[in-house]
Image (cartoon, rainbow over all chains, first blue to last red; front, side):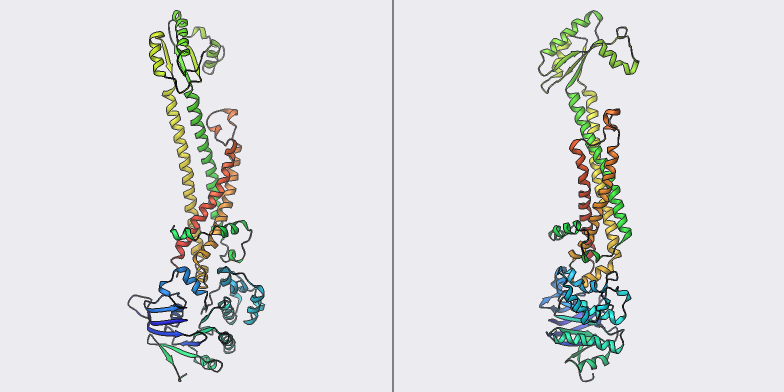
Length: 224
Length: 309
């Protein structure tokens, strides 16, 4: 689904944040991406949904070379990748339900109100359907962001530090939702620096752990 | 505007968006922006108001040029300033020459009463025409293109040496030229108004786009195509341009309607209005304004969106 061959990226000419990364995300897999703050986890995810383009190497998403894609093709690609952003990225003037339904709106699909209600119920946001995002707590925002990420039934779900501002119970609730998605066949990649969360998740699902260290992507193992 | 921008023109969805009172969530994706909304409405209204006058000026000068050109081209005057004992003989000679000149039209000797009437505005009523050295005037109307004034002049030099032909060319041409230039100025004014409207709407649209950077960013991240995002702005600005222009056009047309009628006072300025089907022409202004708003916003939006990943 996502194939990287020697991908490098730097925000400035001559400076590389990520270097020579090779990876193949298989359908239905569950991955964690870990590493210290500033190591490039968010940048790595942004490469995966073509928000950034590699400065070197080959990156294919759903078999398409992202560097050869038009702007419209990138938009279509993003509809197949659900992303839970670290800062959730809502439109603050629209109620939660409309924010969640936004991917349907921008892709010109009709909104099935019954399905939307079920989705709100799944992330336990039913009572907040008409609430504006600024009034939500951190956990509620993350759950709403997850609902928006999956409303188009994407093949891949990427989550960037989804539990960063949440307490343990709320973090586990969110992780359980992501595990449920994985069990339904979605490929899941979660960027986090919380090793306890990774350990707890591995008791629920078979997850591989990737680590960014020294600008390189490594496969982490028994030390977790 | 790039060719690709025109390829993806979705006129049908734009029309639906314009005609529906609420285009739904797609329209609410962009938050309401009071300042740019008012600016666009005001600019479109003011420009439409001016456009009505420019249009009226263009039509009026066109009519004027045509009227002067036609009326004067069909009329000539022959003036006979001969000694009293030769006036009648030369008048008969001129009339005979006119009668036998192809395309000369109908000749009519201006009577003393008519001369008195002509002089009344300058000398007041009861002018003693007999006591004044007023030349004999022959008015010729209905001249056609066949009429050859130069040939008639040559003939009259021999048969009526004191007769002078005035085909009004000397003062007709500058008037017609002036009227035509006024018409060109009116058309230029309309073009400038359209360009200024486009510039103002572009600025307002760019301000709205800049103020909604986060909205655009979020829409791109969740898979919105540029055209989808642009349409949300385009629909809004097109509607505002059309509404503002409709108001300005209504006011401008009303102002033209209440101008004094041409028959009341005469003169060029009082003829500055619409006639017949011409009253329908201002209806095109809101439509054109909507078109300008559509193209200006689309150009601004797509240009700005290309800078966002």
